[in-house]
Length: 176
Image (tube, rainbow, N blue to C red; front, side):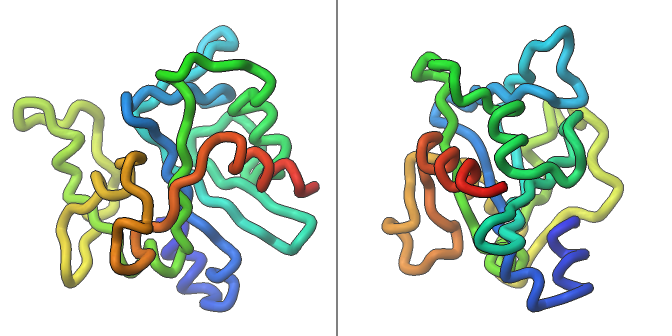
């Protein structure tokens, strides 16, 4: 919804935003400095979504609704504190990042929230806004959190591109 709000305020500004899905094949990604973190431990998500704002060539910010860090947070600070790139994670916890231009995300992404159901009951309260759907889809979340298929397997880039931790860290840490 944050991405949609930005697009409604300024279509041109939307071009500076990238939606980032974070996951891995095992669906176990650690992120520190989350509101639900306890005693300095990370939260291990199956997937997580952040918004990357490339304000200009030197400054970038990350918007994470679940972070205990500032909102928005300078990208380099977020990466250092939330991803802890100095740690050598076991392979099963190494994160992959799917980058989707915000405009493409708004046009293509759909979620009927069926992934939140356990035996027909929501495992956690669903968001207050209605499910997101497009003219072509009611549910394609799994295409976005699948980190084994890169965009080269698709006819277009509607699902963005997948990069590894080192590539994402390099991108974010080269900003102020």
